[in-house]
Each structure stands twice: as C-alpha cells, then as structure tokens.
Length: 197
Image (cartoon, rainbow, N blue to C red):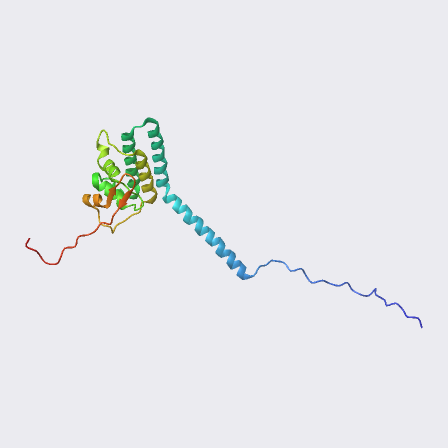
C-alpha cells in the first residue's frame, strides 16, 4: 500500500511571542528619572540665585575696569583713586550699609577685615584712607586696581573678628620693595595682679 503524503492544509501558522519593548519602564527607573530631573531643577535654581546675588559685584567690577581703562588713557591717578573708592562705597551700600559712612583708617580696616585674600600694602592703605582727600597722592594705580578687583571678588561678611586699630594695621602689613609680608597680630595678655613699676 503506497504511503500517503500527510495533509498539511489543516496546520496553523506558528505564532511568535510579542516583541519585548522598553515601555512601560519599571518603577525604579521612574524614580531615578524623577531624582535626576529634580536635581537639575534645584541646581539651576541655586545657580540663578547665586547669579542674582552677584549682580552688584559684576556691575562694580565692570565699572572698575572701565575706570581703569580710562585712567590708562588720561593718566589721572587722583581721579582714578577717587572713583575706585566711590565704586567700593557703592558696592557696600547694598552689601554693607553700615560701612558707607566709614572714612580714614576705619574704612581701610573694614576693607582688610572683609577680604583675607586681598592685600592692601602701606601705600595703598594710606591712599584709600587719606589720599582721596589730598590734591596729589603717590601710589601704584595698577596695584590699586588689582586690590579693589580682588576685594570685590572675595569680600565676605565677618562679625566675630575684632576691629583692627591703626597700630594693628601697621603691625599686620609690612612692605618690602618686592614682597608683602604678613605677620600675625598678637594679643598682649597681662599677668594677673598689679605691679608697682
């Protein structure tokens, strides 16, 4: 009896499983995505707040640089000294209102106390405290520009440090032709009791 070929007309097609997709993603991935987006938003907000806080600083630095370029054209050091001092005062009007009325050594001491990264040597300290009231004052205009720029960039509020006296200022900053040396301000502590010298 001859073999009959199997009838395959009744066979059904093979059904493949559905393709695996990335959606919907697992809960853990949603949580991670939320954290990343939240961190980005917080970072942008913090950057914007810092940018707003530094608006006065940026404006003061821009004006100081403009006045320095103007000085290099006309070489009027006394005008540049007065303008630099005014810029610092205008900056303090918003950041340190109580300092606006300071003058002389008190004003110089304030500038020194509020920026440990800025060095005012004896010549600059004298120019800022006394030179602005004189018709002619000898000082290094480039050093003044650098000191004022540094102070505007690095000034920080301080409430705990004792105000330096004029003698402390002379002791703290000693100037040589090539370097500026700093020494620690030491407090003289007297012995308990009294002496009959």
